[in-house]
Length: 111
Length: 111
Image (cartoon, rainbow over all chains, first blue to last red; front, side):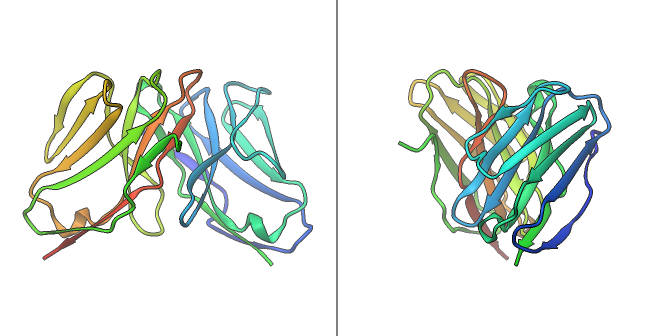
């Protein structure tokens, strides 16, 4: 089975900090995604990547950037964290026709 | 018009009953349809995927797709308390592989 590992389960950061959320997959999948999930708003796509060094904006990229230097690692960067970025962040990889496999999520609180 | 719509629920059914979850989508070019289950505090896990009109069965779960009417449904037979969760409908974007999620339907199965 595909394993998607998010480095932190819970994070607390201060407003204005630069925050790195890491996601690593072990199955050589090309497509990786970052979503955030908020009550009442559901899962919203932030960024995705089809290959190393490639990135595409999703529906809500403002305030975020991403990095994909190696195929197995896809990082989400909050350039200057704000309280409205408090959320559950989910990383996923695409198993061709079989849909996504999600990581366990990172619950980020910005204070 | 929202791209993927689901009734938020909660949908309450007694143990042993059939639970019916519905989803409509707006992009007629959508090709792939997925149902995910998400327990509170956990990440989504794939239950079923369907690509062709008609029914697809897997154990107690049946996915139904009607592209002409742009809806997809999930039936859960012999519902169990362990089925209590939020069910997310997801549809692929026509132009790529990123999934668009509905906000989810919360199912509660009472024993």
